[in-house]
Amino acid sequence: MKVFKTKKELKMYLSEFRSENATFGFVPTMGALHRGHLSLLHASSKNNDLTIASIFVNPTQFNKREDLDNYPRTLKHDLMLLEKNLCDVVFIPSTDEIYTNGVSSQHFDFDGLENEMEGKYREGHFNGVGTIVKKLFEIVLPTNAYFGEKDFQQLQIIRKLVKKSTLKVNVISCATHRETNGLAMSSRNSRLTSEERDAASIIFQILCAVKNKIGKIPLKAIDQWVSEQFEKHPLFKLEYFTIANEETLKKISEISPQKNYRAFIAVYAREVRLIDTISLNS
Ligand code: PAF
Image (cartoon, rainbow, N blue to C red; front, side, top):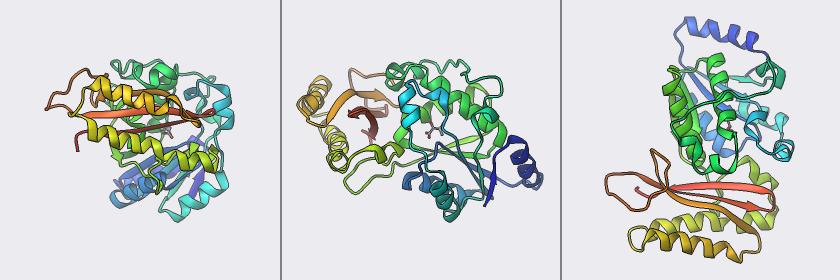
């Protein structure tokens, strides 16, 4: 596995493969890799000649300084996992290498997708995500790029970014990987105590129960039921729960049979923020 820290060296290395018409699969990450990331690597290596990963904790997508500072950083372990899991090339740039003109975000119009859910609670987050993903796509020029469905809003925003910026990359989504208790895998899970990790099974249990309730009781009653599950919970605080249209990400007030819907949830365990989502159609 080749490791590059600079754009120049990475681009030079990739240009040899590009001239041979090789297909590039790209897995952008912020490190602290888990099995969810590894499944993205496997999907990439199955369908591309070369699999490239990046590890970069992107400062512009954090709206709280302490969240950026506390984000887990496990580079040595990550490199070992990448090597073992079919990654051919890894890009680990510094902040200066990426943000040559100062650390700031480009402003994007994602047709309103950026204003829903995560966008309401994490100001500027999606401008930060759009900025880094666009920069990385322009450096790597991947054929296919892989993202997890857990961050469904991010996935839709990246699809919109690609469309609006006319980037030539196929955005491929991969199913959420879960712990045996149902907790969606996330780099942030490493900041949970073992008691919180066990108890966090409630998040997916609630989403599954919502899927079961949909169409049987009014949407307002479902919202109310979810709120009640967290009202007196000793470990978790609900930030939001929404049933939204998959395409527009807008909260729905009624179900229409031709549309696809998802339930989205964000909860806090102390200062650790966890999100999850479930499709309500399949
Ligand atoms: O999902 C993530 O890990 C990040 O948001 C991404 C896409 C790597 C951009 O920094």
